[in-house]
Image (cartoon, rainbow, N blue to C red; front, side, top):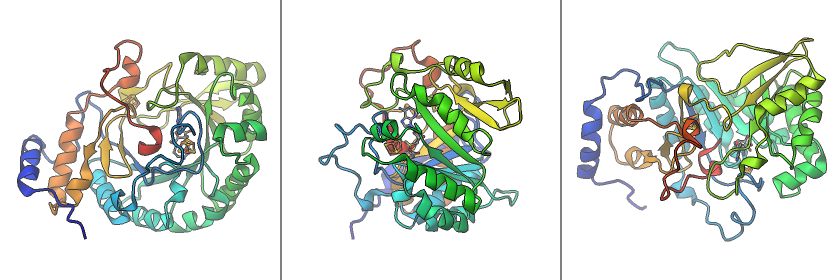
Length: 365
Ligand code: SAM
Ligand code: SF4
Ligand code: SF4
């Protein structure tokens, strides 16, 4: 077997300055933000080719996905997650690519569901999926200890949905997955709709109507300029304020207070008590000030921002033979140096020309 360990001298050099300035407590970054949320990408593969994420022309048959040996194993993911919990993380989200494509994912869910906070509480454990395999897998995920789930769904109209996933996948199968998730008791269920003006913005009202009164929270996400392949244009973004106006013409809505620290969605409830919706305005109303999220890529790189150009290689550390304490100190040091706030600076500062941003399917949403 290939020796994946990195030379100890290199490692000591990289660890020393970091470990020295960490006092063992939960780290804060340079903007005073704690570390609370870890998003774990379990695969860079996907069975969809949503044009805003993995355009078909780029992610075609010639695209080289990561080999299995490059992926973090379930044991490595769980060990890393445990260290993050020690540093303050209370929420774990599995994502991808399409996480349900990762073989035996239920086993990983089981391992993560067994983790506890220092106070002995279970973590908030969830998963984001395109829903294509959910009807088949919902029960096993629930049995493994998954509490809740987020399903991405961009349209109810079958033709629009097939065009957006770009692999001709029928919307009925995703709706069946959502029903099954509800039936097995994964709750609450959230549905994420990325809204692109001119592509699916006419589906906003039908989607709201469909999920109103179902107990499912529909969240509208502004189309973002993530990665470097989706050809993002500002004129294809439907600002949340405009979307809200469209909803208000049809429904009476009341603003709700945020419930969680660092919450990304602005929440609104139907005045008649038939549920709530969320607006995620990453482009027009940046929420970097409360951003307490870290992202672990499929191959174990730690990213501090969705728009980062590079990650920190934790896999090398995990495979080097160093102890948990040193790895925790390294992560803490990385977090303490964090000053990312891309969305707040978007449009204010020009992006660094030589930085190619990481793709969404590689670090998860
Ligand atoms: N495949 C899974 C899915 O689609 O739910 C999980 C990974 S996907 C990268 C996570 C989330 O990112 C999805 O809700 C997706 O809609 C969202 N997303 C991907 N590209 C986006 C973009 N350019 N703008 C806004 N959201 C995006
Ligand atoms: Fe796949 Fe999710 Fe990206 Fe669509 S958004 S291509 S389903 S990873
Ligand atoms: Fe967090 Fe980066 Fe998004 Fe700002 S742009 S909210 S720092 S992930």
